[in-house]
Length: 511
Image 1 (cartoon, one colour):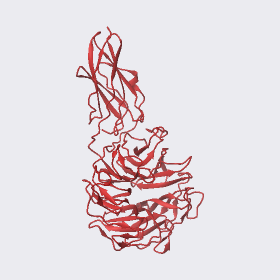
Image 2: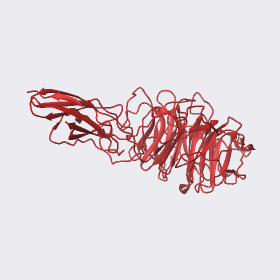
Image 3: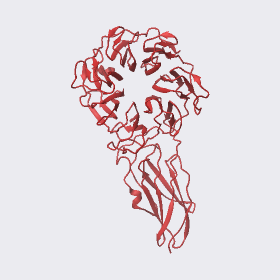
Image 4: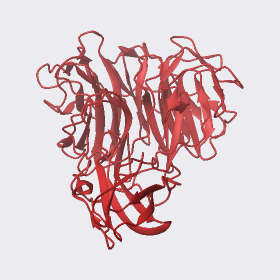
């Protein structure tokens, strides 16, 4: 079901106690959004970190820092297949493809990938000096039809490329570089499909992170119909402005002149790590260090650069992707108490979230990973391939089961059943039996239905909204013959999957 719904109770002939009417953990009211399932599909794994995921023409491309891939369920070091920092998979079956050029040299890593709008070319950036043994300078392009290296695309970039976006005729790159094709381009540049450097030029300097003085562009999203490029990263000055620009700027896509300052959006000690747009809005994820930082997500309007909403979650957002009214993100969220549907600092990290694009409400979609390797942040990149969300990162578990570097979540089927609650029963009044239990929870359904059975026969149902951090106490009072003994059991369903009946619990009503 996986929809946001209002708390309600379905009453039969018996009485629902006040305990079951606990305020919902999620929003009080909103229109419904349907999320993907929280049930991971079988997915191949890597033996390192996935920094970037891209999709084109039925193929998912994965780039990062790794040496091998291995099948779903295979333990680390077993059944490995060589893949040097790059791998390709069938987007539906998940099976690996033969497209496997090795990216080597430099820091031996891919940091960014994006396909052309027609899907014919995959542009790749990172820190490397060779692809298939052929010289390349931190960026390369592959023809997706046959996985050949595109000979026309071989610009010289002086340092790591961390961000790429592509229009029908232009490739925008961002990173920590200072020159492209031997000409000054500070952190951002634009090139034609043939690798010719375009006049687009912006001066991006200063660092917004005190423990890293090197400025960098980490994310780019382009709106060609508005002739606008939005750039995010770790910087404090753009085109000579020190007071009004911080970590985020909108640029003219032809000249590089500033068109949106976004003043006050990103506080000091925070930087932008992710940017994407859907043609109407743009969405960003941020990371900060220290007190008073911004770690969450912002939705803004492409047309005028105004803010649509901003959440307050802590936990270093690394990636965002919008899909059918929901903004999916990867972070290590640990305090979202001031965001609708959110949670307090509950002592653990929630690495994957789904939010309403309409009003930022955190939806009942809680698949999870661990922190994993490297910087131990968890997810690092996301991409939609049809209706399947692919997620890459540093993690080594998904939903508490071993799975390294890569996972994916479909729109259907929903296969995960709610937890089975513990049922107890007492009688404290003549002819009355009170059943009690703690609400269950489900990774991709907020409201669950609790079906009560007396003596093996269905009696009634109650609905309750719950989350793993907020599981209200529930109870139900049944009216029976005084002195009679009855067998009760409880089943929880999300509308598709049942927990199975618990109990039974035998209770004798007072006489």
